[in-house]
Amino acid sequence: MVARMHRSPCPRKGRTGRPRSVETDRAILDATRAALVDVGWGKLTMSEVATRAGVAKTTLYRRWANKNELVVDAVAVLFDELELPDRGCLQADIEGVVLQFGALLARPETKTALMAVVAESTTDDALRERIRSAIVDRQKRLVLLGRERAQRRGELPPDGAGPEGALAATRAVGLIFDVIAGAIVHRTLVSAEPVDAAWAHQFSTLLLTGLGGLG
Image (cartoon, rainbow, N blue to C red):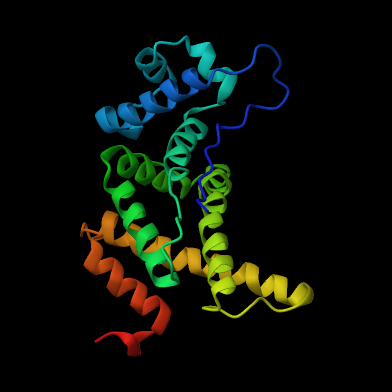
């Protein structure tokens, strides 16, 4: 089973009229990422994006209230490309998604857009919440799928019963996501080191066995 979920950005509430065009959305989001690479966050404007996408500026504002929302959605669709195919065991599954994630962050458009919105979100609570809902919460699907698959294989224990078990499972999913995503983001965007097969194997070994498993 492949966990692939392509989602178009949600339309703004209260809007009516013709259905949104998937092609137009894609052109706008592509133009947003390209503009960020070329001109940076400070010089990025809705007008710049509209011109690059070949649409009217009003078309953008019918979909996004401001450039913050637009850039987050432009990043979110890239992360929706991540998949978790069944590679036969938990360690292989982890290594596969780590390599995908690393390759995604190595792309100039992803790197520039993500760093821009994260930096801006340090002083914008609404933007931080949008990043959480559009990117972080959506990508926890990969951890959920990986845990469920590993539990079926007997590689991980089942979740506990009742509300306490559900709460513990939710906390575990959040912690696993933070550890994996945090390590990859730090290695690619802070340390500027590659996420290659050797590093992915060493990292997955550390994740599954702890410090004692590293030789």
